[in-house]
Image (cartoon, rainbow, N blue to C red; front, side, top):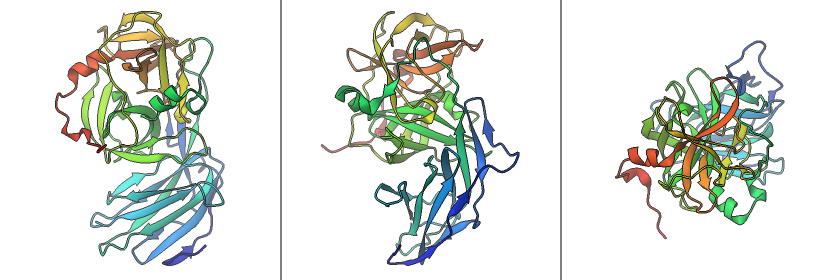
Length: 360
């Protein structure tokens, strides 16, 4: 491996398993465990770059990136998830004190390089963790007819381009995933309950185009919360950059009657993007949601943990009619529910200067 800068080839990050007895996160949906960095913390500055391989028996791996408060430079992080270094994605790491990368495959190569912009540019990877999903079905109503979005019709694929996986983590080193979708080029909608207790690290990672295990997604970050309503279980965020290469989903105040066909596009269990549309329809109107208010409707579309925040799309119009947020009732019975979109539209600000503009 060569580089114009001084390249320090570190030994492969041996991530053979979990640290004995230490469980970072578990809520019955997924769990995360710390992984050992054989060579200790790995730093990069403006004078050099680093490349190294990682390998783990965890299903997904992520790395913790730490910056110094006085660091105002930008660092380039390139992730290659194949041995031939052909399937790579480059991200510019802003001068944020600390953040977690999105989940990565169990094997790959990481390249760090500080950009020579004449400013202080340093970055340290000081921790690694493995996300191990617990695969037990929740929210599967009847037969499970989910399929990969990439294998569906052009119409579903185009709608799905606005849907993203959101990767949250907090100061206690817990991590979880939700689904979200674009409502403007720079604005994303998801569930309020994805925020947990408000201790999330900044900033959560949003991944578009994660349609297969071998696909390198496009990463963005959530920069601030514009709207959060616990009663309607909705949160609306500003992204760090516009997504101008795709169309946001259109919202409607129309309510569907029982039996109306729908489409649910989701990232169940944090997996690649999937769609439920067979036997996917409204089953009951006007049911209690987070509170006893009749804010929700029930549906038969297959969902699992991680599907929270997915758009409920009217099959005929392609407009979003609801926000999926429940996969089971209080007794644990599989029972999918979504919040009526007209109620969410009613609390959205009329002016959204943060929505972003894309030149045509």
